[in-house]
Length: 443
Image 1 (tube, rainbow, N blue to C red):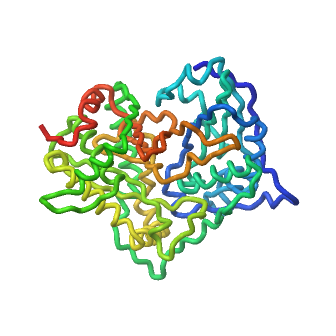
Image 2: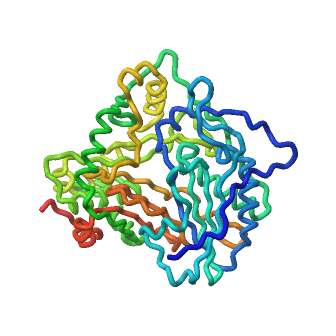
Image 3: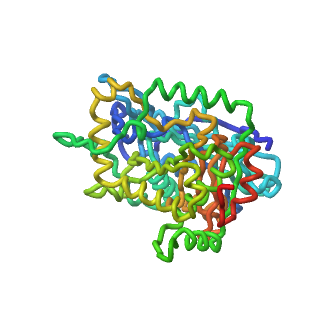
C-alpha cells in the first residue's frame, strides 16, 4: 500500500469552561508498573458513508478532556515516582490517503504493510496517536496507537466507546473512574504466592534469556497467520474439551480454544517432549478483587495466569487435560492472589534487593516453547461508531513475535473468533494441516 501523509499535527483536549490545572502528576500504581511498557496499535476499517475527518478530530479532542491521561506525558515526579503528567501537551493526529479503493487491498492481512496504516511505534512521546487514512472509494481506516501503561484493554475499550459518543454529539457516559491510588498494601502484608517468575523476573536473567533467544532465531522468518474459527467448530471444540471418562465438566469457549491452540502450536513446533511449555493469559481484576473494582476504572488492573505442562503430557493426554490446566490456573488468580501481588509489589526493599523487573516485555523475537494470548473477545471494540456506523474490520496491527497470539471477535458478528498467530515459517505448514483437528496425538 502506497500511503501518502497529507498532514500531521498535535491536537489538545477541548474543554467546556475553564481548563483544569496542567501541573498535576498521577503516579502509576503497581498494576501500571508491571504491565507492558509499550505502545499498542489497532486498526479499524469503515465503509462509506464515513464522517468528515473534522468530526473524528473534534470528537477525540472532547474525549481527551474527560480521559486526560492520554493527552499527557509519562515522566517522574520530584520523588522519582513514574507516572503521567496531566499537562495537556496533546496527541498526534495524522491525515493520510491511498490512491486505491479499499476493496483493492482487502482482505487486510497481518503483514508489514499494516504498519503504514497507523503512526510509528518507535521513539514516540505522545500517549495516543491517530491516523485517518482515506481511500478513493470513500472508505476510511483509522489506525490507533495507545500506551499500555495508561490503560489496559478494558479501560481502552471504554475510551473508544466514549470517543464514538462524542463524535455523535452525545454526552459521554458512563464517566471514567480516575483514581489509580485505590490499591493499598495490607498492614501487615500477607504474601501468599510466589510472584518472582510470574509478574517479576531477575533483570540479569531476563536480559540473558532475551539475548540468547533472539540470537538463536534472528535468521528465521516469522509469519503472522490469521485463523477463523466458526461458531460450529467452537461448539464442537467446547463439547470435546468438556467430556472426560464419561463425565461432563463444562469449560468456557475461551478456555477450550486456548487449550486447542496450545496443543496445535506445540505439536507444530516439534519441541522436545520432556521440556515444559506454558501460556501467559491475562486476567482482568475488576471482577476478582473484593470489594469489586468499578468497570469504569481507568488504568491497569491485570495480572496473568501461567498454565504449564510437559510437552509430552500436553500432546498425549486428551483436550480435556489442557483445558483443565488452563481453567485451574485462571481460577487461582483470585482476590487473594491480587492482594498478595499488591503487598509484594509495594515492598521496595525486596524489589531492589532481588533486582526485579516486570516479566511483561515485547523485546523477544520468539516465546517458544511458551505462548502468550491477548484476548479481546469481551471488549466492545466494534462499538467505535463515529456517527455513520460501526467498523466492519477490527484487528491488531502487525506483531511478528513468535507465539504471541491475539483473539478478536469476528466482524461477521455471529460469535465466531479470529486468531492472529505468529509462527516460524517452517512450522506454519504443519500448523495449517492440524489447526482444525480435534484428535491430536504426540506422534
